[in-house]
Image (cartoon, rainbow, N blue to C red; front, side, top):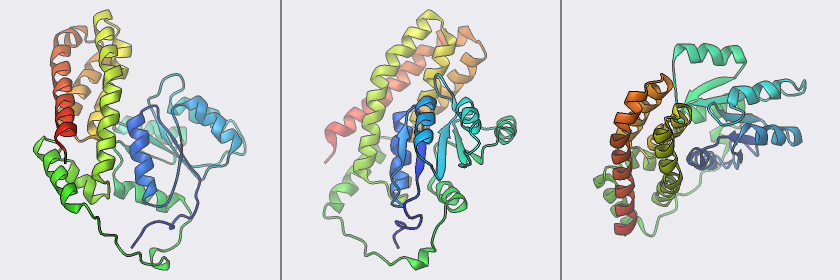
Length: 270
């Protein structure tokens, strides 16, 4: 049975400075027939909310200029603002949970967002009809199912094992390819920046880059790279300059290895 139509034409805003996160959230919401407005930062979010009433807002925590908490505080200054705001974070912990509750967020959920959590959030905060009230829709037969399966097998063979879970969550191979393309494009910009900040010993900006890499690698299912980037995020935020200098070559090597696997898939796919 199709999920489209359950939430009518609910107005949703997604706020995130990361293109991969915006892409994934947009695709997941499309499963419900929802087309969210997407903006890359807090200032753009505030402008959107001033012009339009939203039923639900998904807000990233760590963003440049105005972060998620700072943005939410500005929104709450308006007496007519009552939209539930869900904070998204790549970090977890009791202290963060307490902080988010004190700030007044409706909930916080870790990234990457899974389909079950998203559906629970939507059911809790949006008016909806029962799934049984919607008409069944016949499944369309994919004319190129064999090609899709071959590409899925190739992805799995190249180490992108998350593809099985993504297919189960109704993400197509073409959509995952688009996700890999965004990761590659973002990396072309972010890797030189990370190297520059590392050579300048600018630990604050370096931490921002590896925090984003941690989330991006997690989104494409590269757990090894995501875990390594998380180590660099923790150590750089702790001021461990020696770790950043000595371990950057290893992180760069792993990062490039992932990009090579992406390139190999895009050149070998059916």
